[in-house]
Length: 231
Image (cartoon, rainbow, N blue to C red; front, side, top):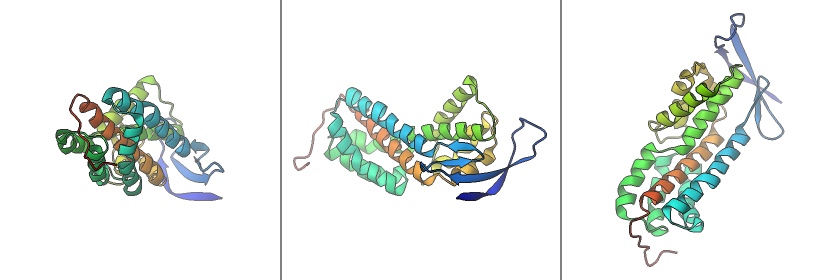
């Protein structure tokens, strides 16, 4: 059935004869959502994030970090599990530090300094999520983003992601400046907030995976010692 959204948003300045936009959200058979006739690519966005991690992050860690894909996947799994359940990069940090030491043998200089720094600032999943959210809001309001505007969104999303707090739903807070950078209405954040829980789980898992990959690459030339009781 249909879910009547409890909000009315200001229309962007693309037509003076329209004063507002009343939103109706409908769940589709494939698990996605449609808002005002625009399909919200929730499931496709999740697939894109997963593909990015598998195709870009994992191979980058293996090639540039000089570890096997199997070892990296085993090391990332505990942090990913916490990230999905807690939706917080900081909550996943202890599991990430432990597995990076016991399963990858990363030196304490990397696990004790660089990995916490990466957890606080480096969020590849958030950058993807902010960009996808801005594109959707543009489609919802009937605003076509050109190449320059898309480039502005990506750059703003990357820069803004460094300041996102490591808390559940933290990237939604950073959506406002991304939308404002290309003249999209910041009120659109309310639409994304209503369906953000599941995407946020996978964004956080992508963040954690990217952080471990970065630490692995930084430690590529450092001696690695696995504990004798590591499984």
